[in-house]
Image (tube, rainbow, N blue to C red; front, side, top):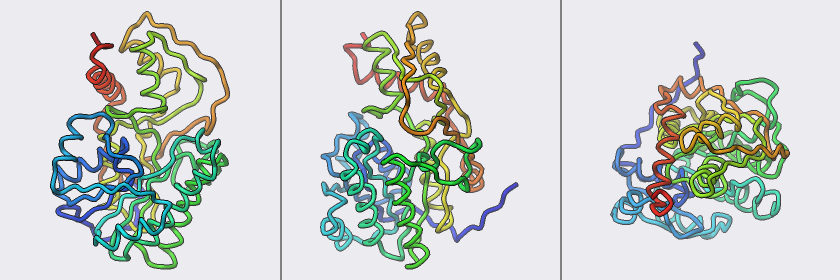
Length: 328
């Protein structure tokens, strides 16, 4: 049994909270949990108008709740970030906003640097020493693994623009913890999925192909990923905020690896067993294998609650619900 030094517990109940990236998949689900379970007063900021991933329940809860307010700002603009902090005294800060698409980061590293590095600098610099900040990093910082599962002590070998920007963000957070006594935890997210996720992420992309195009086309079947359903990921973030130790890094993953080929087969069986899976065998950007050692997170009392297969089924159901013409 591995033991980790603990700080005094921090309580989210009734807290004043800032969530960056609040319009995104994880951010909007986190806001919902903070409002409904902990009775927090939540300020969300993002560079896009909140659509909350086309989810009617999130839309009604967040837009119709007096305890939630939204600010459309650019986190790379220090003045705009500073103004938000001048108007509020936050107990917790969840910094989730990022340019998270590795291909976009590679195509425009200047934009990736401004959002992921300068934006993080602005958030940490503006935060008060009396508040706790949870920085959402990525398992991409590990690069290709020396061994699996990946513990938090594994060297950071990421070398693509996205992973480098996240490594820089982590270093900024640790710099402010070590030199300016800021209360900061780092969460390295592996692969979160679930109902409400849209865009170029692997699971919503394959579900859309399967349901709308009646085919599944993958770049490469061999990469291994650690998929976690959104409910468990939000619980992990909340657990780190309340139970984690300042200056520590925590993996957010299940500890179970799934190949992209296995994901495609499971999805095919869930939608239509006659569907053909086409493996294009192209080179994939990023790490070949990412599986979390989640014992450090488990030491805080967190446990996986939703099996991968059940989460995938829920996600397919959500997609069909939000695309009724296709579903019928």
